[in-house]
Picture 1 (cartoon, rainbow over the protein chains, first blue to last red):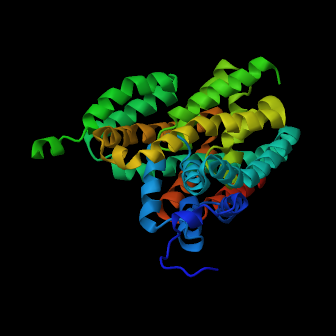
Picture 2: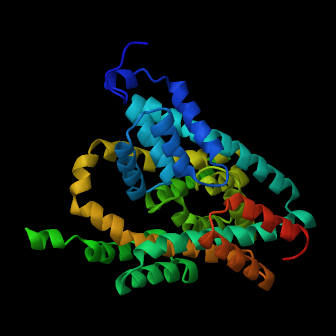
Length: 195
Length: 175
């Protein structure tokens, strides 16, 4: 090992991160997070263990990945993988993140398709579905608690809920109708007033 | 898998990828609408079952897509559906990561992030309602949902544990 003068990886060092290590790291994240806490594990691995990013960079990356469409964790894998090794790095990160969970979910799916008419499988799924619904509702509660703080936010929430769950409108239509007023409402005006 | 099915999988999940604001859970209502209503790949009850399996499995929130692809067109369908769901959003990340410092300052970003947040919450809540209705929830199931929601909202217990216990309750004939 050559002597290091800085703590985080410099550009020339990051170039040497092997593709397989990126895949392995994200595979580790996927398996470690069994049952939840995917973002906490990502930070632990990427920032503390591998030192591929500083805390500040990681937080900024999380923001990009939250704002852009797509599953946040997949987006983060793309971001980190691409930062380290470009497009091949991004592909390795996604493959590492998804391979094991896909195998597990496919085994579950194969078992389900073979046995979905068994009374006992139906009974287990009745319980699991009830809890899976609860997961969605609690996620809505958690994210809603921070952003539903004005009558307009509530109106947008109710409009999206009613349009998709009850009227069953296509999502594209819902977004085309709701996005312009939503963005107009959230447009940062204070900066204009201050300048 | 027929070419028509392959194309439909790509279009449905490629589109869903770009519309999944606030994470993968917000497009569940759209996937249900198309897979059950438009293409008749599954019944509402089967979709609810797959949703439960995907929630119980480890990994990111898009595994429902893998399962819908699998039940429609086997392993190849599963891979195609997953790639279609990942690729468009991943390309956006690659493009935006490059200009992020400039984008970060833009009022568009702030408006998009904060304006669409309540919409995303509505979509996530909608996915819960749609799955509950699709599974023809009984009164006992609604009670269990209420209980589990209270647990998830007030504690930090591992979700997979609660889903497993709920499955056990089902097996014992409690719901």
